[in-house]
Image 1 (cartoon, rainbow, N blue to C red):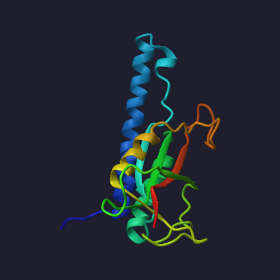
Image 2: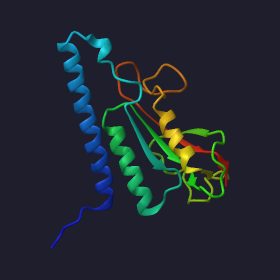
Image 3: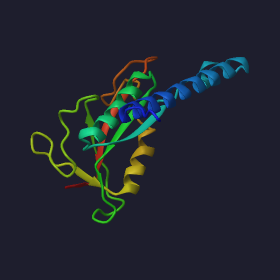
Image 4: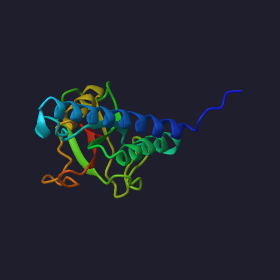
Length: 171
Protein backbone atom coordinates (compact mmCIF):
# COMPACT_ATOMS: atom_id res chain seq x y z
CA UNK A 1 0.00 0.00 0.00
CA UNK A 2 1.30 3.42 -0.96
CA UNK A 3 0.99 6.18 1.59
CA UNK A 4 0.58 9.57 -0.02
CA UNK A 5 1.35 12.75 1.87
CA UNK A 6 -1.31 15.41 2.20
CA UNK A 7 -1.23 17.63 -0.95
CA UNK A 8 -0.57 20.75 1.13
CA UNK A 9 2.46 19.05 2.66
CA UNK A 10 3.83 18.42 -0.83
CA UNK A 11 3.63 22.10 -1.79
CA UNK A 12 4.94 23.23 1.57
CA UNK A 13 7.78 20.68 1.54
CA UNK A 14 8.60 21.27 -2.12
CA UNK A 15 9.02 25.02 -1.66
CA UNK A 16 10.93 24.45 1.60
CA UNK A 17 13.31 22.00 -0.13
CA UNK A 18 13.94 24.44 -2.99
CA UNK A 19 14.57 27.27 -0.52
CA UNK A 20 16.99 25.10 1.50
CA UNK A 21 18.89 24.11 -1.64
CA UNK A 22 19.16 27.75 -2.71
CA UNK A 23 20.32 28.88 0.74
CA UNK A 24 22.94 26.12 0.77
CA UNK A 25 24.18 27.15 -2.69
CA UNK A 26 24.36 30.82 -1.69
CA UNK A 27 26.39 29.83 1.37
CA UNK A 28 28.72 27.75 -0.79
CA UNK A 29 29.20 30.66 -3.19
CA UNK A 30 29.95 33.03 -0.30
CA UNK A 31 32.59 30.62 1.02
CA UNK A 32 34.10 30.28 -2.43
CA UNK A 33 34.20 34.05 -2.87
CA UNK A 34 35.92 34.44 0.51
CA UNK A 35 38.50 31.75 -0.36
CA UNK A 36 39.29 33.22 -3.77
CA UNK A 37 39.58 36.79 -2.55
CA UNK A 38 36.24 37.87 -3.98
CA UNK A 39 35.36 39.45 -0.67
CA UNK A 40 32.00 40.26 0.82
CA UNK A 41 30.92 42.43 -2.12
CA UNK A 42 31.20 39.50 -4.52
CA UNK A 43 29.24 37.27 -2.15
CA UNK A 44 26.50 39.82 -1.39
CA UNK A 45 22.99 38.45 -1.63
CA UNK A 46 20.96 39.62 -4.58
CA UNK A 47 17.91 41.77 -3.73
CA UNK A 48 15.48 39.00 -4.67
CA UNK A 49 16.69 35.43 -4.40
CA UNK A 50 13.47 33.51 -5.03
CA UNK A 51 10.31 34.33 -6.98
CA UNK A 52 7.28 32.11 -6.40
CA UNK A 53 4.41 32.03 -8.91
CA UNK A 54 1.12 31.69 -7.06
CA UNK A 55 -2.57 32.25 -7.76
CA UNK A 56 -4.43 35.39 -6.81
CA UNK A 57 -7.90 33.94 -6.55
CA UNK A 58 -7.31 30.56 -5.00
CA UNK A 59 -9.85 28.97 -2.67
CA UNK A 60 -10.41 25.59 -1.12
CA UNK A 61 -7.74 22.90 -1.26
CA UNK A 62 -5.94 24.57 -4.18
CA UNK A 63 -5.78 27.85 -2.27
CA UNK A 64 -4.55 26.08 0.85
CA UNK A 65 -1.77 24.47 -1.20
CA UNK A 66 -0.72 27.80 -2.66
CA UNK A 67 -0.77 29.61 0.69
CA UNK A 68 1.17 26.81 2.46
CA UNK A 69 3.89 27.07 -0.19
CA UNK A 70 3.98 30.85 0.26
CA UNK A 71 4.28 30.44 4.03
CA UNK A 72 7.15 27.95 3.60
CA UNK A 73 8.99 30.46 1.42
CA UNK A 74 8.48 33.28 3.94
CA UNK A 75 9.79 31.01 6.71
CA UNK A 76 12.91 30.10 4.69
CA UNK A 77 14.81 33.28 5.43
CA UNK A 78 15.44 34.05 1.75
CA UNK A 79 14.73 37.43 0.20
CA UNK A 80 11.70 36.52 -1.86
CA UNK A 81 8.76 37.77 -3.89
CA UNK A 82 5.44 35.97 -4.25
CA UNK A 83 3.59 36.90 -7.45
CA UNK A 84 -0.12 36.09 -7.34
CA UNK A 85 -1.33 36.30 -10.93
CA UNK A 86 -4.93 36.98 -11.80
CA UNK A 87 -6.98 34.48 -13.78
CA UNK A 88 -4.96 33.36 -16.82
CA UNK A 89 -6.84 34.12 -20.03
CA UNK A 90 -4.92 33.76 -23.30
CA UNK A 91 -8.00 34.17 -25.51
CA UNK A 92 -9.93 37.02 -23.91
CA UNK A 93 -7.04 39.24 -22.82
CA UNK A 94 -4.65 40.93 -25.21
CA UNK A 95 -0.96 40.21 -24.65
CA UNK A 96 1.40 43.08 -23.83
CA UNK A 97 -0.95 45.30 -21.82
CA UNK A 98 0.45 47.33 -18.94
CA UNK A 99 0.87 45.28 -15.78
CA UNK A 100 -1.34 46.35 -12.89
CA UNK A 101 0.39 45.59 -9.59
CA UNK A 102 -1.01 45.71 -6.08
CA UNK A 103 0.98 44.94 -2.94
CA UNK A 104 -0.72 42.31 -0.83
CA UNK A 105 -0.45 41.54 2.84
CA UNK A 106 1.53 38.34 3.21
CA UNK A 107 -0.36 35.43 4.66
CA UNK A 108 -3.71 37.22 4.64
CA UNK A 109 -6.33 35.11 2.91
CA UNK A 110 -9.27 37.28 3.91
CA UNK A 111 -8.85 39.57 0.90
CA UNK A 112 -9.18 36.74 -1.64
CA UNK A 113 -12.24 35.82 -3.61
CA UNK A 114 -13.19 33.01 -5.94
CA UNK A 115 -11.70 33.00 -9.44
CA UNK A 116 -13.57 35.53 -11.50
CA UNK A 117 -15.27 36.81 -8.34
CA UNK A 118 -14.65 39.83 -6.17
CA UNK A 119 -12.63 40.71 -3.12
CA UNK A 120 -14.47 42.10 -0.13
CA UNK A 121 -15.06 45.75 -0.90
CA UNK A 122 -16.15 45.05 -4.47
CA UNK A 123 -12.83 45.24 -6.34
CA UNK A 124 -12.96 42.73 -9.20
CA UNK A 125 -10.17 40.23 -9.63
CA UNK A 126 -8.20 40.84 -12.80
CA UNK A 127 -7.26 38.62 -15.70
CA UNK A 128 -3.87 38.32 -17.35
CA UNK A 129 -2.36 36.74 -20.45
CA UNK A 130 0.04 33.92 -19.54
CA UNK A 131 2.98 35.64 -21.26
CA UNK A 132 2.34 38.79 -19.25
CA UNK A 133 2.22 36.68 -16.08
CA UNK A 134 5.62 35.25 -17.06
CA UNK A 135 6.91 38.79 -17.66
CA UNK A 136 5.78 39.77 -14.15
CA UNK A 137 7.87 36.93 -12.69
CA UNK A 138 10.99 38.22 -14.44
CA UNK A 139 10.28 41.78 -13.30
CA UNK A 140 9.86 40.50 -9.73
CA UNK A 141 13.57 39.62 -9.73
CA UNK A 142 14.28 43.37 -9.74
CA UNK A 143 12.24 44.10 -6.59
CA UNK A 144 14.52 44.96 -3.66
CA UNK A 145 12.74 43.39 -0.69
CA UNK A 146 15.52 44.22 1.78
CA UNK A 147 14.11 47.59 2.77
CA UNK A 148 14.89 51.20 2.27
CA UNK A 149 12.19 52.27 -0.13
CA UNK A 150 9.06 51.52 -2.05
CA UNK A 151 7.38 50.07 1.04
CA UNK A 152 9.76 47.12 1.29
CA UNK A 153 9.91 45.22 4.55
CA UNK A 154 12.96 44.06 6.45
CA UNK A 155 16.25 45.82 7.00
CA UNK A 156 19.80 45.61 5.78
CA UNK A 157 21.18 42.15 6.38
CA UNK A 158 17.81 40.59 7.14
CA UNK A 159 15.64 38.53 4.87
CA UNK A 160 12.30 39.79 3.67
CA UNK A 161 9.37 38.76 1.55
CA UNK A 162 6.90 40.78 -0.49
CA UNK A 163 3.70 39.62 -2.11
CA UNK A 164 2.15 41.23 -5.20
CA UNK A 165 -1.02 40.60 -7.15
CA UNK A 166 -0.72 41.23 -10.89
CA UNK A 167 -3.22 41.50 -13.72
CA UNK A 168 -3.61 43.40 -16.98
CA UNK A 169 -7.38 43.65 -17.33
CA UNK A 170 -10.22 43.79 -14.81
CA UNK A 171 -12.77 40.99 -14.95
